Image (cartoon, rainbow, N blue to C red):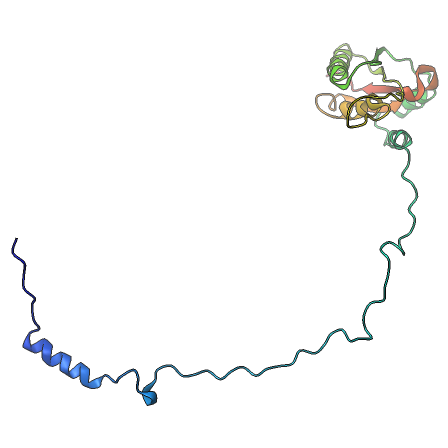
Length: 201
């Protein structure tokens, strides 16, 4: 393949280029410099915000912290929350239930069960009681006892007693459970719960 030779400028292009060259000025000319030097910004002195006399006095961490009272015992706290919860059942039936004069129509004892065992058993019991039209049932959890376990995380005393109210308020039981209260002494006291169910539709 033959290489093409370089093509030169036409006479008209050369004339145009000569006129452009006449208007151009060299970049190194100091009087025609396109970049103007900037004046340096004035230096401002930043005042000292902290003088030698304004420094903070020495202190110890926590020296002014007030002594907070110890938090309530978890069992007392749970009992108080349940006792002060708003009453959602019939007030006449509630007063009878609080005096132990309302007899539970069914009961379940969760003693000795683990959380994994007790949860499905409780769900089945409550759903069956509701289907049978029962209104008041008794769930026995026990108050719990201190026991040593090899687990690295300690298990709370009365873990079932603390867990059952949450299960009763959560799906699938929350929609059919109307009220939860600690049982009267004749029905187990703090180791059992009255569970008042809604009327089946």
